[in-house]
Length: 138
Length: 216
Image 1 (cartoon, each protein chain N blue to C red):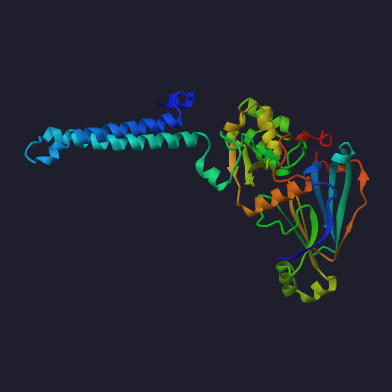
Image 2 (image 1 turned 180 degrees about the vertical axis):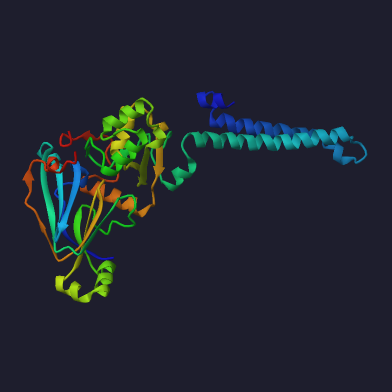
């Protein structure tokens, strides 16, 4: 399976900070948010994320039950000749064409493999500090 | 004999010589008693029996020497693992000289790790400290904490940094760790490649890891 690297996680994903990765999908767009610490900046914590545009399908797999990293270790990649895209296109070619769907994937150490069928993606601006507290479930 | 081997009183050279001496003694006995076969009327059943015992005894001594030698090699580290793992370092437990594939680690486990260890303990286990305490008080046993490792280029590399830190913190020697060899498992090999590469490490890894300030 061929993949095209689009973006690299700013630090090794072994440096993802407490709280791990947050996936928010209220419908429409999906937000993959993360805190990380930077070893080269005195372990200061930063937050950033990826927004996937017009998500038509998505899935998350624990790192213990995936068959392949899809070349996506610490990298956002686009899977070329994706079987998943082909299946969805077979189900509804009109919608698949309308959204111009693509298969995106990123593997983050200790967090697993995140995959999205979406039209596009955007990297959020990196900010200092943690977002973890915003999403704590009491 | 084995304690003497373990203490170094009997070396491998001594062992070889003992096997040779035993075999030579038996052969000498056979030669000295060769007359038995030169005259098929002059031997008795007890003499035949004694010869048979000597031949069997000599063979057994040689086999025994081989088994002891094998036992020594086995105790010095699993032969099969050393072969499949190439020139893995260490002469004791496979993880004795194992290194890490990342430079720092966060104190909090992954979400999956938290669930697994909390289920085992029957109470929340979120951090390395929590797991170390559970190991110390016996709530979680060392065998419940699998440590995946890969042997690459003769180096043994640990994949579960936080779990191994908890075991160390709990004072559990590496010889008691539940080591799981993932060498050759493509998924784990790819994860190791990613960890080493992103952390700027070679296949030698690093012998020490530092807890990060970012997860406190």
